[in-house]
Structures are given as C-alpha cells and as structure tokens.
Image 1 (tube, helix red, strand yellow):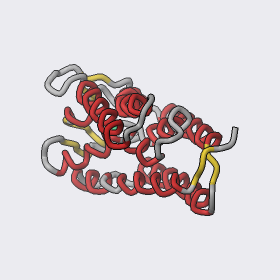
Image 2 (tube, rainbow, N blue to C red):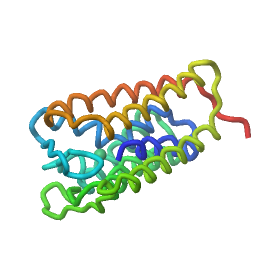
Image 3 (cartoon, helix red, strand yellow):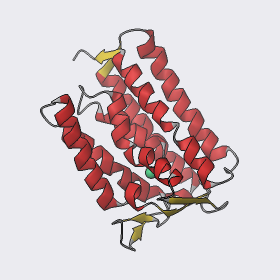
Amino acid sequence: MFLGHFGLALGAKRATPHVSLGVLFMAAQFADLLWPTLVLLGIERVEVAVGATVVTPLDFVSYPYSHSLLALVAWGLLFGVIYRVVVRSPGAAGIVLGLLVVSHWVLDVITHRPDMPLTPGGSTRLGFGLWNSMPGTLVAEFLIFFGGLVLYRRVTVARDRVGSIGFWLLVAFLLVIYAAAVLGPAPPDGRTVAWSDEAMWLLVVWGFWVDRHRAGAPR
Ligand SMILES: [Zn+2]
C-alpha cells in the first residue's frame, strides 16, 4: 500500500492537531522509510519479479526488521516514547503515533501477498493479496487517502500560499508518483527500488513544511 499510509497520517491530524504532518507521515511510513536503508545494507531483501501481483512486480523476499508485526510494535513504542520525551507532549499524541507505526503493518497485510512476517525470526507470513486486483487496490488506496485528506482539510486552514498551494502540490505529487509506480515499467532490480524509495524522506520534509503554513481551523 502507498497512498493509504499517507491517508491515515492525514486523518490522524484530527486526533492530534498539535502534531506536525511531517511527524504523522514519518510514523505511518516508518516501515517504508527504514526498509530501503536495510535493503541497501543487505539486511533485508527485495527482488523484481514481473507478474508477482497485478499491481506491483516486487517480491519481498525478506523484511523482518521493517515489516514484521512484532518489530513494528517495538518501533511504534519507541517512536511514541521518543516523541513524548523530545517534544514533552502531554496527552495522547505518543499513543496515536505508536498506533500509526503499527497501522502500516495492518494496511500492508491487506494488500501484500502472504509475505508479511508476524515476528522477525518466525516463519508465519500473512497477506490478503489485494494487490491481485487492480480495481480493489485502487478503491482501497483512494478511499483511505481521500478520507484522510478531507479530515486534514477540515481541521486545518492555510495561513498563506505555501499552506494552500504547497499542500495541493504535495497531494498532486503523491498521486503522480503512485500512478508512475502502478502504470510505469518495472524497475530493473531491488537496489534501484530501494534507492528511489529513499526519496520518501522528501515527502516527510514536505509534510513538515506545509504543516507549518497551516493553522488549526476555527470550530
Ligand atoms: Zn510497507
């Protein structure tokens, strides 16, 4: 899943209005931000297998530390605690962020083939394979993405042009890279996938930037 993760992050703004969209992106996409670096270090493995699913040609051979349930629960705890300590944020923000980290696993299990590990060392792998259906995948991705978008727009207002134009450019950019990933040619190999995935950090920075130019909407 791709857009859905960003949708959950956008929607989470409603529960935690004081948390920057950049932090929400980082939590919801923590698994996919960690993953390319682990692949490039040779710790996790992905291969390109054209026809693996209708939507993506990626074969996720092994990703126990970025994509197993147990690892993501641990990363979620760590993420929530570090946020609480660093930002000294009272209330539920740390919990929401921890849940967002774990939500990545849930959304990926829905779309992936049975390749999502439960524990780093175990052999149990889950996946409902929504990626075998292009219409099913698109409906799920767009429903969550646009649902989150509506929520985010309801609880924030642009303070200036960066807050409005910058925000819509971010939305457009997400849609364009998703379209390119789904409709474009298969990448040559796993390393290329990992290198281009590192660009995800740009979206985190973009989230921080835009969010600073938006304020809480008057109730
Ligand atoms: Zn993922």
